[in-house]
Every structure is written in C-alpha cells, then in structure tokens.
Image (cartoon, rainbow, N blue to C red):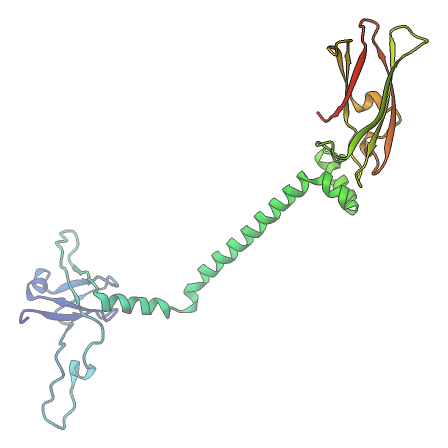
Length: 277
C-alpha cells in the first residue's frame, strides 16, 4: 500500500510496519515492542524495495548498501499512552516470525539450559531420598521377618530398637498352618478337690521360630454346652524360666502343664484352641 512505511528498531533490528498517521502521533517517537527501546521511527525508516543503483557500475550506498532486511515485517500498533510520551510499537508475528523465534530458542546458548539441568538434578536427588525413606520404613515394619530369615541383620535391628523403643519378635502363624496341638488331656487332680490339670504338646513344624500362641480352654457340660471359658497367655503356661522372645524353636515342640481351679463349676468335657490376639 502507498501509505505503508517501515521502521527498524536500532536495539534489536526488528522491522515494524507503520503508517504516517502512527508516526505523527508522537512526532515519530515509538517504543519497540520486542526490546522496549524508545527510538525515532522516522529517522529509522527502512525500505523493503530492491536497492536502486545510480548507474550500472556504481554500488549502492547508505541504507541500500545493507540490502533487504531479513526479519519478517510486523505490524506496528500505536496505543494511546497519555502517561508515557513514546508510543510503543507492539509486533504481531505471523507464522514465519513464530518459526524464527522457535529456531532462536533451539539454538540458545548452553548457559540458559543450566537452571533446567539443576532442577532435573534436584528432582533426581529428591526421588532417590524418597525411595530410601520408603525402603527404610518397609524394613522397620517388616523387621521381625527380616531378622528371622536373615539372622545377620538381627544385631543391627537390635541396636535400632534399643534407640526407637521397639523389639524384635518371633513371627506369628496366624493361619495356624505350622503350629498344632499334638496331644492334650484334662484330668482332675486326685490330691486337690476341684483342681484340674491340663497337659498338652504344641509343635512347630516351620523351619523358623514362631511366637508362642495364646490358648483358649473351654469347659463343657454333658450336652457340650459351654460352662466356662478361659484364655491362657504364654506366660500362664510356658513357665517362668522360658524365654518367650525366642519363640518356639523351628521343628520343635513344647510340653505344657497348667493347674486350673474348677471348684465352682461342673464339667464333663473340654475344648482347647490356639490363637494370636
């Protein structure tokens, strides 16, 4: 169009498309929309026409000697800025300008990539720390199993528990798949009226120690109805010298003998079960 002119920012060499009306708004003073440089848009006008030669042999001079600008022209917008004297020329890039910016970002200096690498390294350290924290929590939670199947870790867990106030316990056979009562008997004590003697053998068939279970003794009448029920903790039947922390040895058994006062009841039978509270 005949009324279109072009001006180039001296700071970043961005070329803007302007009109005489825009240049007259602030007596030619504009602000670059790219680098914010204030410059004289009239003095920095450029031509996008091919350079003219004065004769066939004379080279172009002045602005023509620079050749055609290689930056894609952008339309200049001159908003009303009553508080600031210079007019800002904000560019609206087209697809070529977008491709140009992407190319500049791709070939950015290595220094601009250092913060990104630092963040990546920080994320890696944080992830490694979280993995170690989860592993430590899992090891603490399953310390009994780890100490049982890897006895070499026992001293380390013992020192840890001495500080944390915990203990290393034998494993429990909650399903009672390895513990069994091989034999049991309940007889009246002939020397003491109303006193019963319970004897039983508890066997551990596992290849590792198991925690002592609780025993539930139920006395029944002739119709197999419950008369009385009593729970026996390991300390009640294992004896005062037994080390309960060691559990029942692997492939081992214990024989128990318990005296029960049944003087206030009358019973004809009994049932004996094992359980963990």
